[in-house]
Length: 138
Image (tube, rainbow, N blue to C red; front, side):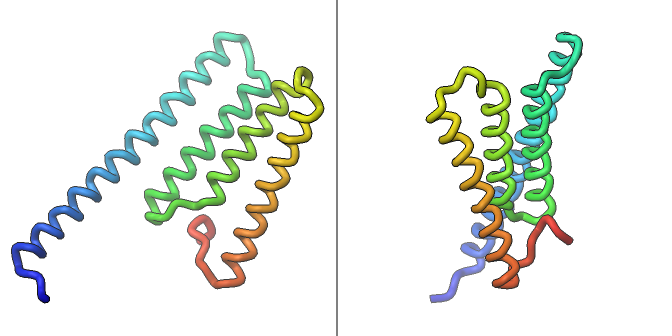
């Protein structure tokens, strides 16, 4: 069955609406990341200086911003960036709460970081082995 001209126009219009909504959503997410990071910077200035948890939180914002930027450029969501964000968040938990954590929680968080690091390695090896172009490396 062939599509009529009207059906093709509706599909094309729907795709364009989706693209505009998609870009608007990415812009809102990007603007929110910038806003949240500046709120954090202003709080750091108000405290008189950064702590390690503040610096690691800024790294999380930086990674989120980079992920949105890469998605804008390539239309692909790099899974590795999500894993990097998770590793940074878990590192922040370790840095902030390590003194008050029970040994089993400390080991669990450390093991989770190791598992995520191995996952990044597997993704890198898999993408290079199967000749998938990495959107981060141009």
